[in-house]
Image (cartoon, rainbow, N blue to C red):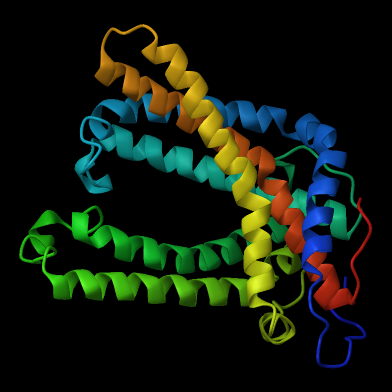
Length: 298
């Protein structure tokens, strides 16, 4: 597939925000049954591994919510389990994303999730995802520095994080990091669908140029395609599981840990299930900027 055989003349038209968001949701619910049909084995596997990881992680992490231990402070067994859980989740998420991109853009029928792991498009997608994810981690790592979650406590001990100067520097640095990350991700996010459907060179320059003036449309589009159902799931599961567990009125600390573990596992699965909404948004945005049109729902 050619990325742009006959590109439109500059300036590129603005992305129709409401239409693109609406199409991402309508195509998702229209094809939800197909998603469940091809994804249920992978989702069951993720559920089992995530549940085991959270259960093993609970006693070490939830005993100190305010200052949880860093990754390097936990046991070797737990480190291995966390890495396996994280890797599996990334693989399943990338497989779902590639499948959804190709279904919308190429009209390719969805196949079993995980079957495309051996394809070049899958690994191209993983590489782009990790690069863009690195920009997300910059402000996150910056915000975690004061509590010593990433760096050893010995390096943080001499920092006077309670002083006004240090607090202001950390806050301004965090805001700047978030803004820069948001702009870069919005300008380059179309590399994701391009990687899923094409085997040619990555259109980095084309993506940067064609999304000019559309940063906030792309940013808020991804927000509206991701956060509403995620927050609804988090609130619902926290309330439902918490009500059921705390009703026993036995050990509040253990009950709180069970609530957090159960809710985290369920939300992780829901996040994988609703991932195609944001993937659909990127697919329709890709069609707009690289094919100069917005397709009808698949």
